[in-house]
Amino acid sequence: MKPTDLSPAARAAADRQAIRGSWDGPALERLLQELLAYDVVLDARVAFRLKVMIGTIVAAVVGFIAAVVMIAEEDGLLLLAVAALEALLVGATVWRWLQASKMALPERALLMLQQMFLQIRQDLDPAEQIRVNVDLTGPTKAKRGQKQKLPAGAFLAREQYVFTDPWCSVRFQLRDGCRLTLRQVDQVMEVRRTKRSLRGKTKVKVRYKKLCRLTATLLPPAPVRWKARPQVDAEWERLRVANKKGQEVAVLERWFLYKPHEGRPKENPTGADAVGLMYRLCAMREVAAR
Amino acid sequence: MRCSWQTGLLAPQPCEMPAAGACGMCGRAVCMAHSVAGPNGTACPRCASANPGYEQNEETELESARSKYYTQYGGERYFTDRDRESVERERWEPYDEFET
Image (cartoon, rainbow over the protein chains, first blue to last red):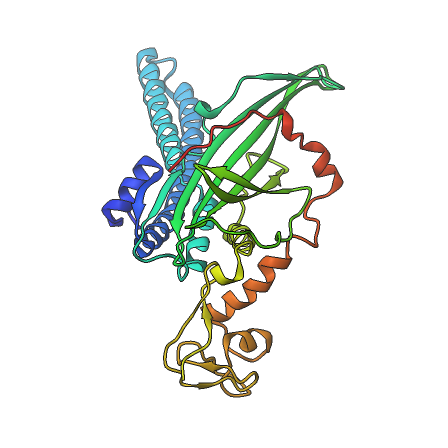
């Protein structure tokens, strides 16, 4: 799939790395499907451009050595021109790889939304639109908080950055008139540990942790008497009934923690996690209202 | 006679299409869309999801999800004590809830 194969709505969403506005259920499902297919192509493109970049760097080094051996003594200016040309080529391939990497979409986040809407498509009120505010840029530098110094312990220094990314907010109406809102806020913690190796070198190791906070809010069309509480994990979930503009709403939150062995965390709650949260929240309504 | 199957997950409502037959196991009246063929004849999505040999479709998957969603969190512990110790929620910066 090429960018030109995308529908105008999907193209706009891919360019902006965001989905915003009001959508019909089927249109949103189609959009998510297109973006997921497009992301597969983008991933392949990033991998291809990485290979091209590595190949160009290797070729440039070999070419430069060959040029030094062959023409160094004859013409210094020509050697300089060869070096400049190779540097230009390497710079262009690196730039293209970086551009492709920046365009990539978070696959698991899209997958969560797609799975979720597939499972609840029968419950949506067809007369009402889904309001979506989804930011697919991920934990960028703009979302990074202040540097925090942690107790060094056995290390030379320990610093932490927290990226706060409230990337997902989706609101829709169920066919019985209840309004449901699903929000997700990711907090990515980057801990930089500086240590000295046995040979005396100073090394910095970076570790990541990701905490996702998934919040489902249920707003009934009229005041209700809440039924019994659903099953709640006391450690990782919080259930409360809050007052919003004079009306009682039920809020169920769940935290998900991911700690990858290497690199930035890519994990995300699944569509089943989100639907499970909403399902248990909806069980709080009175039987007659369900 | 009308189909008595409840469609949907979050806001279940009766299907109420004209019934095409009855489930061979529980006797529930089901329409064509909610009947699943299998070794014991036609079945409703609930019986089809609970018994092997029946083809799985969107309705049977939703049915098995109903029980799974409600029980999967409450009884099981998803995280270890070590995970819990590494999370100090109070230290994290508060976030601004944003409205759609």
